[in-house]
Amino acid sequence: MSDTRANSLNGNLDLVCAWDPARRSYLARQSFSAPVHLSKSYWDGESLLVHIVNQTAGFFGGDTIRVNVAVEPGASLVLSSPSAARYHPSQGRETRIQQSFQIRAGGSLEVYPEISIPQRDSRSSQQSKIHIEEGGELIFLETLSPGRVASGEVFAFENYSWRTDIHVDDRLVHRERASLSPGESRLAGLKALFPNSYYAGFVIISPAAAKWDDDFLHTVKNLSKELKARCAASKLHAHGYSIRLLAADSLALREGICRLRELIYRGIKRRMPDVRRSV
Image 1 (cartoon, rainbow, N blue to C red):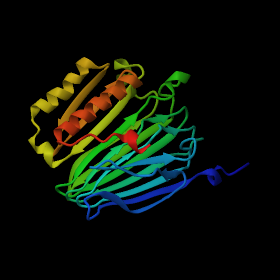
Image 2 (spheres, rainbow, N blue to C red):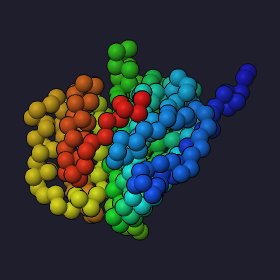
Image 3 (cartoon, rainbow, N blue to C red):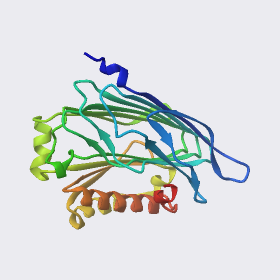
């Protein structure tokens, strides 16, 4: 009987984004290993856009990916991905994504991945640790599909879990823990609202958010009236907000994410980067 551990991948991504004398962001250091690959970076005049590419068909049981990204003062980095993150049947072995992000004062980081799709019998976990110096800026997105809906797989994965901790200086300002398995009561609540529930969560930390008021919260909530979705936002104990979106289908999810992203960039008074330019 073959040892499936021999087929697992132990990949890494290590990036440092800095500012050059011409006031352009660039990758001062980069290294990566399979299945992780980087596209050619693109400078749009305000931010450096970088795509993270999975060179394989997706993630498999036993794969471990470690991500370490630092953004130096003055630099602006957008990390995105051109295709969905697919978690394949894991044969009881967990896929692990371990992420660490550091943002220095005056630096800006947006993490804007494509949707995560946990397939039947997959088991996966993601851990994100984010440290921001006072004066740094973060836009952090997490997404989740119920599965391969077109193939009749809806919440058929074995387990999908994530943990996110965000510190500003030494203060914990956001902590999220979730572990989803089919048959759990928490999934029953989601499916009662939308049978094929799609999820997205934004966290925004920015000095500009200190000037946002209740109008921002009301604007987010009112999106529920315009989309096949439910939206809610809460203020953090920092210059930031947490936003949650639950959508009826993938089209509503994408439209909701786009509308929220536009709202966020208007709020921080910056031009919204077009991630398609880096493809």
